[in-house]
Length: 267
Image (tube, rainbow, N blue to C red; front, top):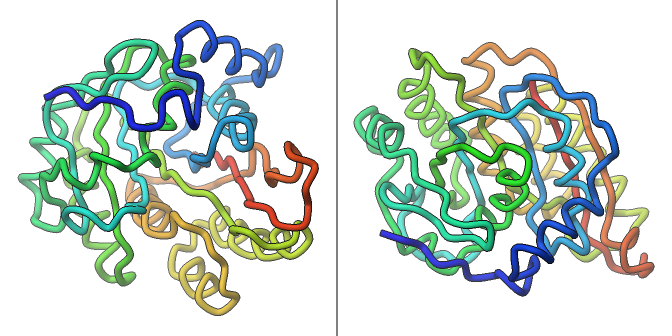
């Protein structure tokens, strides 16, 4: 089954030429690349968050297999919904679903379910694909749309993913798609986001969820981030660092009401 893009020409350019040009505009000239186990990337329109996502991905060595966890903004479909077969279309071409990996994940538990409806109108995973393709070229991926749940539930989802990939010969890159604070003054957004980011770089999913609730941080991808952190610690992750943080004010010049964007590399 082929998924057609829903935000091509809106969140990012709809033609291959324009898309490549914009990504190259955001790219650093000669980035130093290193291996990593996971990334947190923003998913807003590229004019706002593209530089953060591009500069983060440009720093990591390519992987052939990727799992992308994204928040489910629409509320449609299963609680943790996996698109299991076919390919997703973007202006660069078609990116194949890693059907071997999706099959393995689905056999390891029932927290994650095969479901296409959750992905039909959702942008949080689609927006990452052109940037990953630009730098990695040849990869297959597994998209999982995540709704809000409890820490216990997130850890069950993480175990299901971990059990599927722990014995694989090829390393799997996990990507959590998330924007940070939404529609607050720039100074407030940066202060709140610093609190959340500190928990992420300390690989503390429990602390992240606690602080998000306590400080009313409107980070939309807490579910993907918590699942990824829990899974990556089981896979031996030991450190994380911020590649780039910006707010939409850095692009628009309007600092009165911004959205925060963080690019984080976890190794």
